[in-house]
Length: 225
Image (tube, rainbow, N blue to C red; front, side, top):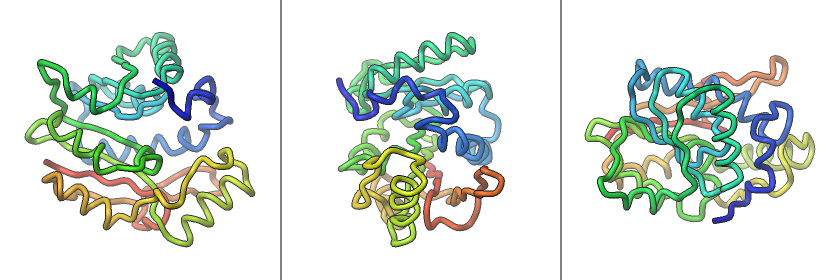
């Protein structure tokens, strides 16, 4: 099973490299999740598209029981190795969500996360629908992605890829960006209701992200079943 992220897998934990922006973004992602879930201690969490485990480790450090899945074998290997170094008990598997939800007995989760993933998929609704049988009746889904508008094209592609070189050219496809209204519509078709929506805004001076009402670029949303 191959993935376009295979070639960059060895850089997952390089805070100055290919995934540096994810490292900077991660504290506010965890802050948002905690604001929705309260205590994460004992929560059963599925991290879809976990990559090298940046989010998975942060949630496990909060006391969550985390399972991370990704289609990149190299990324999963990096995640496993790093969790051994940090002594965090995280269950990583190289698989996709459609395969994962065919288990018997079927695992159920309090929280399913898919962060910075949907903007790389041709059919994001299919991924969300695959989450439904895995979610507990009172469970939550947290998704983050990139809005689709002129400003997001200029910032996420022209600036981030071609001018500042924060990420390699070709990382994003503008046509796959998702407006919040589109994401909410997809979630409603799954039977979920929007609980919270926030923008994740990057501040150049401090080189930090903060949660904001501005959802014009990166945003994160929580839905309840």
